[in-house]
Length: 366
Ligand SMILES: O=C(O)CCC(=O)C(=O)O
Ligand SMILES: [Fe+2]
Image (spheres, rainbow, N blue to C red):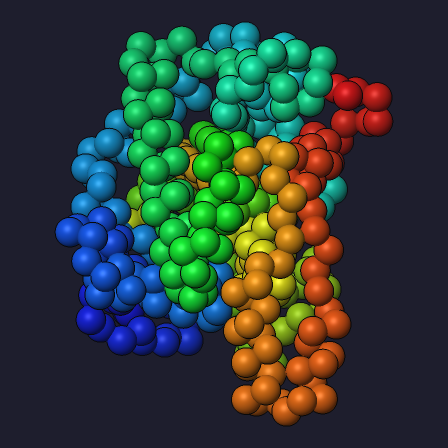
């Protein structure tokens, strides 16, 4: 069972399930208590899991993403040469369609095809990685419906960022500073199609990874058992699906994160790990889709502005200092303060990741 966290209710911890956080108390009426309850629930979920469900029924009608899924299926069902008309190689190496197994994670081809859309840029130049123009499928209504979704997800990004700022105890001035780092988000929308893996296949639909940026809002169709999240455990656990060495020697279990009607799955990316100096961890996840259906998922990545220099936030450092004083005493508090994450310019980091994903050599798309 999932623990429902909403206005006035305490966060309930469950060993192998993720909390459901309702965004409604934040959106409705702007009252401080409602907002604080959402903010507190998100803070707790980020400390504990780095992954949670967001109930967005107050913002989005359930038919909306269903319609996006239908449009995506119409596109993926086209003959290969039709889909190839918008290949990423026509453009900046990142925007457009990628064939099955074109995307690589940990050296293995992902059993998926996808369309990637990014924030449009001024003065596009397709010789520069990420700096070209979006290529839209020519399915009627596609662009209009997806643009409406992108606008909603951008607005949701700022809402969740604001709630997280409150959850971290940031002052208004600190929030304004953080907001200025994300108010022109270099967002990415991926539309992913997953044919099932053959039953005897050792392959993977999407290899184990952390998301790069800030917040991921994942809508996925009703397929169960596909998305898996790695939860670290304090002690070894009996589990046949336990980590296989790909992610180092951490102990933990993979839990499946199945879709819940009216909710999207939200997880935090590596930039939040830097902002919070490791207080929040970005969690490894993967997709293994067997079964018989063609799965569609639509993650929206709400990212920092391209030129943002992401560095640990004072508010997170205050919490870490307090925690170490309470739990470990002064000696450890000095140690904690020494280990500060290095700042990262988001756009540079993203280019490195995308280069790696497609296996581009130095010199390609500079
Ligand atoms: O398809 C999914 O459920 C997750 C995809 C994912 O993790 C990603 O694209 O980063
Ligand atoms: Fe991901």
